[in-house]
Length: 231
Ligand SMILES: Nc1ncnc2c1ncn2[C@@H]1O[C@H](COP(=O)(O)OP(=O)(O)O)[C@@H](O)[C@H]1O
Ligand SMILES: [Mg+2]
Image (cartoon, rainbow, N blue to C red; front, side, top):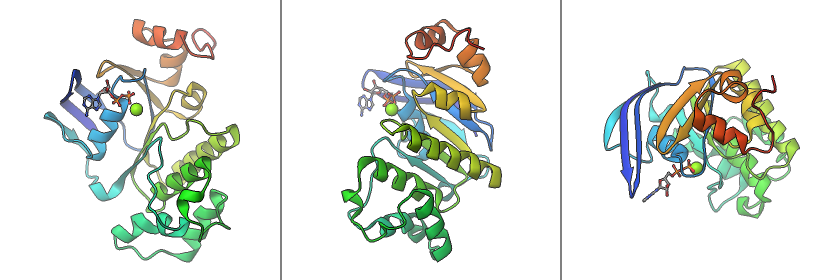
């Protein structure tokens, strides 16, 4: 995916990305402080927001191929099953029993198919929202802080699902997270945002262990785990 001269003003905040490339089939981590524009960028890519100017070249992908999971799972007021098959329904795809069972089991929700989705625990709701995003075999998935507030086992589950899917059929992932261990473990490329700009991109090693941009160094200096100089 290629971004060219993308601009969006909202209030005092202005997102401006002159040029960026997110290589297809790779796991991209987006890091940066609160209010740096990560979610705005995600929404522009998904199409929830329209840019004031600029272009996003999806290199052949359509709206049918892309999806996003947020920090708050937006579940429908219906059963776990109906939530899970919703992306298939709107794409006029018949849900296959074995596919539904596969995903429910992955998320540990196999005995909760008929349960009202909003009565699940918050972690279970996040897991449901995550497998719902994957059930239709998307080609671009944005994970916007979906891992926040999850216990370590659940984070590990999300990570293993991402890597397993990646080994079967490459998806372009964009994972927005402050969990730098997660970013370091999973990502092929890391992109740092500040003040609506994409300031620096590189491998996890370059970005987390040998950062050169003063803003990236500053961001990392305030994290719980000190990455700088640890490799
Ligand atoms: N509708 C809006 N009107 C005015 N400002 C907005 C609006 N939506 C978002 N913003 C501002 O845009 C900035 C970037 O927000 P966001 O992309 O959500 O940041 P991040 O996800 O990196 O924390 C923030 O300062 C936020 O207050
Ligand atoms: Mg955000």
